[in-house]
Image 1 (cartoon, rainbow, N blue to C red):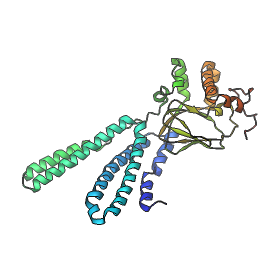
Image 2: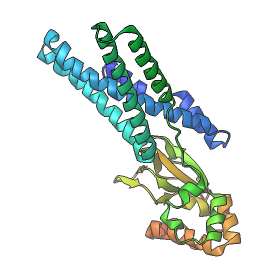
Image 3: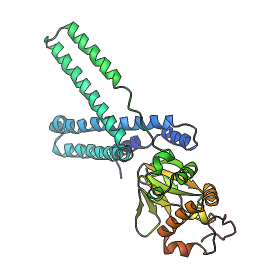
Image 4: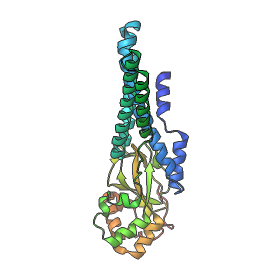
Length: 312
């Protein structure tokens, strides 16, 4: 059973509705700006909260501790410590996908903290009569100018265009320029959120997914199976669209995916048999014996599969 404090912490870390709206707009190819803004806001919130919670832990030990006793202090420090761990986990989730942006954001927040500390020191010097009013005002104006320069977070590049992601999938590394251009026109980039279900049990798939970066879990199996950079899933959706999924694919981090729809795959198969063979061979290797057991031998990759019975 969780405490109200733990419930509050978890609620604060959930993705707000506006963040999900931003993801929806991005996937409909309507706008990317809101998603970038929401990601910037989330990272700012996480990093600022980390600083506050770390200071809170020190405050609990050094100031509150002598007033409430050792047992109560240990409980407070434990709760705060758990919150700090949760913040670290959320920060790491973004850092794995956008390390350069995270470093830039951390640098800006450190500089902001430095300006605040410098302002406090100037105020102390003024209160003690060491510096005069005019000098204090001049120093304050300089700090205001520096803080304005640090007010805007660094821009985040979502890196979700097929051009950005194509090179991260080893399957496409050997393609020539013409084939790369052909597959690039067919692929769509997608950002998946942590704990998002990408492919649900019982649904009929209509696309194959390539993982440019991130970690996903295949649930519904006897043992845990994780998929990560360079791997793919949903290959049967291209050749047996009437089959229903018996497993579920869930994102365990922010994931950048490339999506190849069945319709676009059929177009590729018609225009470039060699490229179609590349994808088919990769799927065959991944599925192995399971592929031959699951798909009728006579099933044509370029056919629509609509006359085949559904899997039980």
